[in-house]
Image (tube, rainbow, N blue to C red; front, side, top):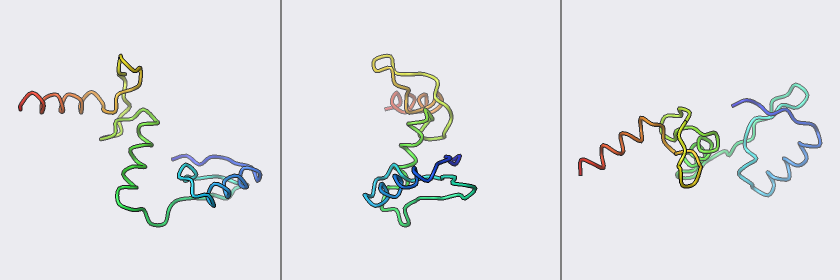
Length: 97
């Protein structure tokens, strides 16, 4: 993950988000040559997996392997959750039953 360059005014808004316990504030930040990392100390059951899933979905990556997804759902226009390889694996499993 690449650090996001911020200013002092941005740091104030970030601290407010941390105080209100918003999840989207986690990440790496650069401020005047200093790296600031904001993350949860102890993640509950499934929180780490949920964050990884959300990050991959937002970036258009396969949720299983992290490869860039190229095809999109024709009905919704959104990218599929899985790459072509993993979509084929699921199709094979469905046909075996």
